[in-house]
Image: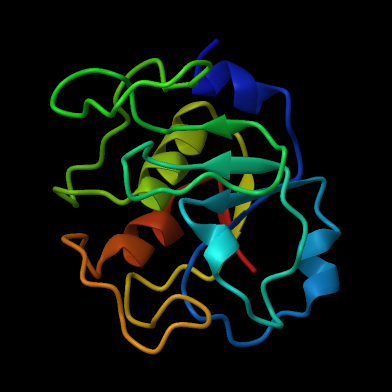
Length: 163
């Protein structure tokens, strides 16, 4: 099974990023049929990010710790060069690369947004801010190689809707 196949079984999708949220009550997030969270989401706490999790999306790299939730785990990256994580049993990868010409090193979140766009799967997103605020509960902004223009790319997608 590939990530694209896995996601076709889900609807009413909201992606919860790892930015510091500002406004949305938990009940709105938790009311979606499908809540997808990223990488080490389980390390972050905040009153505005909800509690529900249906799918765990990550890059499968060593810095992503196992989640305490028993939910399907998948990657929006294909298992092919230049991306080659340490393989574990039952990992689900994308069938192919999903690209944008505007960003050279897309984050896991942007890769998933591009994949959902390619398979024409509508989604909402929340707590995405192009790496301008710390992760919930952290004091410092994470140092990443990702572009602070990612949110502009996501907002331009046809199947995306900001909460």
